[in-house]
Amino acid sequence: MLSNLIGVIWIGMGGVFLFKPELLRKRLQRKSWKSLRWQLFLATLFLSGLIIGATAQVPGILARIVTAFGIIGLFKAFFFLKARAAQNLVEWYAGRSLIFFRIGAVFQVIFGLILILS
Image 1 (spheres, rainbow, N blue to C red):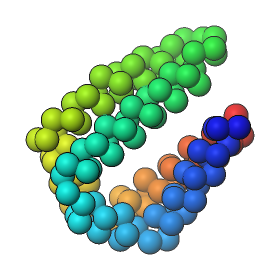
Image 2 (cartoon, rainbow, N blue to C red):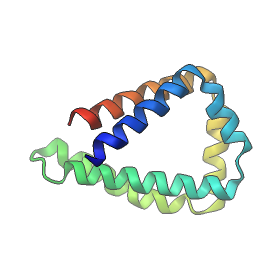
Image 3 (cartoon, rainbow, N blue to C red):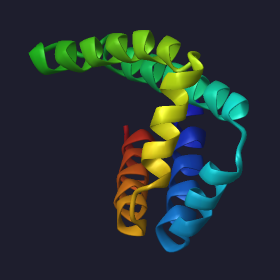
């Protein structure tokens, strides 16, 4: 039930960013570093937990590899609390072209569909 709700939210946000990628770029450039740092931390922590939870009961080597990436994501989330790491990441994303944001939005929609269909 929760994964369906999250999937719908991801698809909605991905659709908005697919058709209006400049909204995401402007939002990244406007936000303060402190609020973005916490948003990056929470998003990475949430997604890593979601990945670990989704692959915990699945047998096979591929599931274990994906679980390992989830664990790495948990550790990486804490690096986003450092101001310089978050600032570098946001500056890098803000400098990308609009096609980069559209490609990311497509992946976001696909991930949302996977969440709904699983």
